[in-house]
Length: 193
Image 1 (cartoon, rainbow, N blue to C red):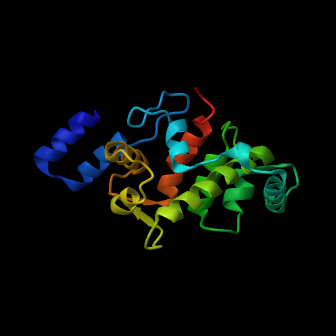
Image 2: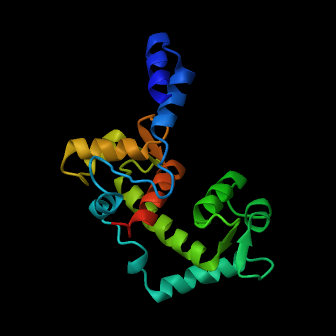
């Protein structure tokens, strides 16, 4: 379907159709699907970024994340429900809370356990740190130019493939939610292969 959409987009020059085709092309792979970025497993891509992962975080930082989890656990049942975290949450926008909840609920049972919350915080906090190191003009957008200038990947073809894999909407710039959506999937696959 995507090839047909792309062909029709090129033929007709229709922007909404082009955007839809790009989004379909750049959708993250479903959980469990084999993923390769420029011929490399996500683990190798994350290592190139300098990502240390969940294993590298000490008990002190984990305890801080558990403490924050507890503050947000209004009914003290040791898990966050959608109502508790998304609907009744007070921090960030509802849309941001929904995205965080969806990413953190790794077993998709409709609740975020303390461990799921801690793992998600570890993954996203380190990913954001890496993102902002590459964001040369501090505008919270990472352009292709900034990404290439970071020299994270010596092979320009690989760098381009990685950027395209992260750029879900194909607009040539990454914003944090878009970037984290893919990064989180890669980080959770890091222990595979």
